[in-house]
Amino acid sequence: MSSSNSSSITPPPSLDQLSDAQRQALEQVTSITAQEPTQAIPLLHLSQWNAQIAISRFFDGETADSVAEALQAEEYARAQAAPPPPPLQTPTAVPRRINTAVLSPAPRIVPQRDAAARRPPFLISILLFPFSLVWRIANGTIGLIYLIFPFLPRFRALQQTPTPTTKRSLNPRDTAARFIRSFEEEYGSTSGLTWFDGGYAQALDLAKKELRFLLVVLQSDEHDDTSAFNRHTLTSPEVVSFVKTHNIILWGGSVQESEGFQVATALGCTKFPFVALITHAPNTPPSASSQGMSVVSRVAGVVTPAAFTQKLLNALNTHSPALERIRAQRAVQAADRQIRDMQNSAYEASLARDRQRARERREAEEAARRAQEQEERRVVAATTLARNQEQWRKWRASNMPPEPKEGAVARVSIRTTDGERVVRRFEKTTTMEEIYAFVDCLGVECEGGEAKPVDYEHEYSFRLVSPMPRKVFLPDGTTVGQELWPNGNLVVESLVDDDEDDEE
Image (cartoon, rainbow, N blue to C red):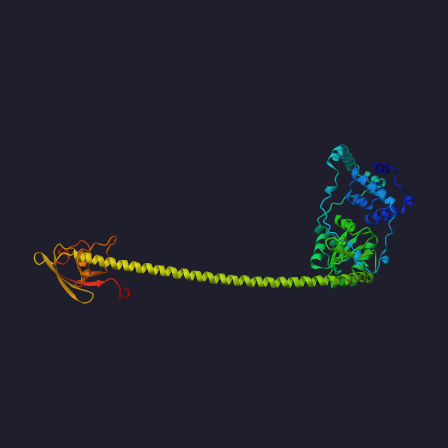
């Protein structure tokens, strides 16, 4: 804590008083933020000469709390005690051969919309609320004065140094669209480059899923070499043809944006323009890559198109065989999976056919069983009906009154369905139902003592008709004296078809 307080009170050193480590941090901050050294030195001095914290303060416009200051002080003390790091390598000093055992990881970066996690704690916010309120009132008052006196901002612009502004980050798709639109407006939409219109995380996931190479281009709009690199190297026909021929995913970002800055920090970018080739490196140790994705080649600064493509081609030749083996394994697995799916489909279809046949067999057996039961019930019903009819005829014949000899009688001639003629006398008061019973009981031998069937209602299967003139007589309560007096001629007409008679 004491080191933090003392460093904040001590004035920042001049450019000539800087050590090698401080000069390296100053070079990194000025290359990313495009600040003047006189403006970057106070910011680095406030950040304990930590380049990442200074760059974060420059883009976010926020200050760290006391705990962060203490941690920065301890890191600064350890950095002073440790030997100075080696100087940054220029693009010409990059080794030609890639060592796959020391590949740097390519982590998956998902930027947040707002930097809400860097706000001070709630207790410190309460303690600083009066000062912030006074600052807002004073700032509003000064703004009102500048509005009333419009010539005052000119003097303010001459006296004050420009302060970094806070940029509000957008979602990755909007940020990528803004970068692509700015690039096409500056270097033309007919350059031939096809940029990935999504975030870095989506591009990394696509490269991992499809086993393709991902080319990450990080630029600083304020850097002097950006325009020359884009015009002479990135948009050259040789580079455009190389990217299209090898089906490389191209993603670009600006370090002025939150996502681009986070990607540059994660990939260890130290000089602009910066290009990193990322792919899936299965032969690397688990600790050397993040989720299997590694940076296999780096290009920093302005290089010629031939050197640029040659360096990327070396990385492609080194890692393409492993990717081809993985693609072949995936193709074999996909073919096996397709064969299994086809076998499962055929098996399911066979099971469905078997189930259909079993269902049809059960339905046929059930229909046959129902038909047999119905036939059995019909036979039983027909047998019962015939037995009841026979028993009823015997009972009715035993109770039939004898033929009258004298008195008020009518002579009735009856022609049966067989063509035979039967003549019989009936009393005048005999009902037509008696005549129906007489005709139905013709030929029935009665032994006497027959009982009437229980729960049986007899129905006649014929009707008696008078031919001239034709008249149908029903077995009702009308008498012979009303219908057939003194003589009558009747014909028996069967109500059952011949086919039904044959079946019975």
